[in-house]
Amino acid sequence: MRIARVFTRKTSMTPVDEDVYFGVPPALLDIKYDEVHISCTFSLDRDVNTLASCWGEFGTVRIGGPAFGDPGGEFTPGLYLKKGVTITSRGCPRNCPWCYVPGREGKIRELEIHAGNNIQDNNLLACSKEHIKKVFAMLRTQKAIDFGGGLDCRLLKDWHIEELRSLKIHQIWLAYDNKRYLPAVKRAAEKLTKYFKRDKLRCYCLIGYGDEKITTAAARLKTAWELGFLPFAMRYDGRHYYTKDWSDLTRNWCRQAITRGIMKAGTEQLANQTPLFGSQVVSAEGGGGGLYEACGGEDNA
Image (spheres, rainbow, N blue to C red):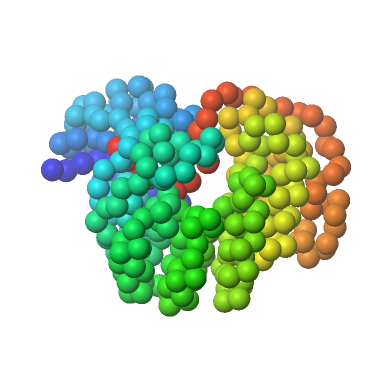
């Protein structure tokens, strides 16, 4: 069966081959497909009816992806994610109020392990020890390994650290999404910083959830840095609005060069975003979705 995969936008994770398209069909396209899968990652891209109509003449159209709540089945390398990216499990046993994964994928499902150097499991360490060891055995055949899906710092054990040390690591990602997680993040930092430098230790930091104040978010990002991580700010899109100050904070803590410059300068005013730059509304959309929704997720049609 020949399948066209159509994406609403191009990201660093989308595959690139002759049957991958972005948006409407190319003007001179003259191919008949068995099926056309329109894959949507972000909720703000869910209005795909016009796109589906455009692709109708090229094959049977199916619409899906994380933005439509797809639970995901067995992972097929290279189909909806670029080669090198792999998913060995789906779901998560946690019930974080800001996360869509448990509701979409369920608790935890171990899948067949396919080779790849970028692990996009939502919670790999929640899998059985046998499964995790098989994943690490596969990773020992890979280079530039990236745990982009993140490792749950609350589940990180000493034997995990030893397994990580046996790999050719590019980046290890953890998350510090709430100040309640600080003890677990500290324990993980104490273990990981013995063997890995900051450029290999990344930390997702969800900011702006609920009634979080910008000063609280900035302090949490700075704490992640002080623990030895290179933080990556992820602004929660379910918030009613954001001022320009939030946009500045997000930019300063999701671009490595800016973050390093700020911390190298050691300027409290910049690191904590204390100056106010007005109250311009930059996002007023309700509902969830956006970057955080896609984190660790697969573009499943």
